[in-house]
Image (cartoon, rainbow, N blue to C red):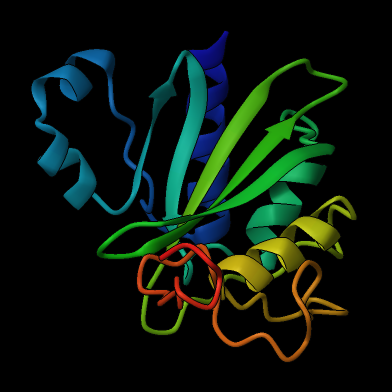
Length: 179
C-alpha cells in the first residue's frame, strides 16, 4: 500500500510542477547508496520506515503542490498532524506529516531551505493546523514562512534576540547560571 501511495504522490507532484522533479527510489537503490550520496540527492521519493516520503526544495514547495496533496481525489491529505523544523550543518528543513482520513494513508514531506536565508511558504491557509507550528519553527529556528497571516514569536518574548534551536545560536551560559 505505501509503495503505491508513494508512486501516486510522485506522479501527482511531477504533474503539478510540470517536470520530472521527483525520482522514485527503490529499496535496493536506497540500501546501495551511502548516507552521503543520499544526503546529496535533492529531489527524491522513498519509503521511510515503510511510509511514503518526498523531499523538495523550498522553490518546489508551492501552494499548488500543497493544494494538490489536499484536494486530489486519489490523495486527499486532509489532516496535517505535525510540522517541525530541523537544523543541519549545511541546510535547514521543514518536515510535514500528512494523513488522509478518508484514504487511510500517510505522507512525509521534507522541504529543504538554505541556512543563510531560510524560507518556506506557509501552508496555514491550506491546513489551519500549520498556524501555531509554523510560528514555533519561526520562533525557535528562524525559518520564515511567507504568506503566514500572523508570523510572530509564540514562545519567546518579542525582544528576544536570535533563535535558540539553531546550531549557530550563542548562549550566554554565565547569565543563565550554567557556567
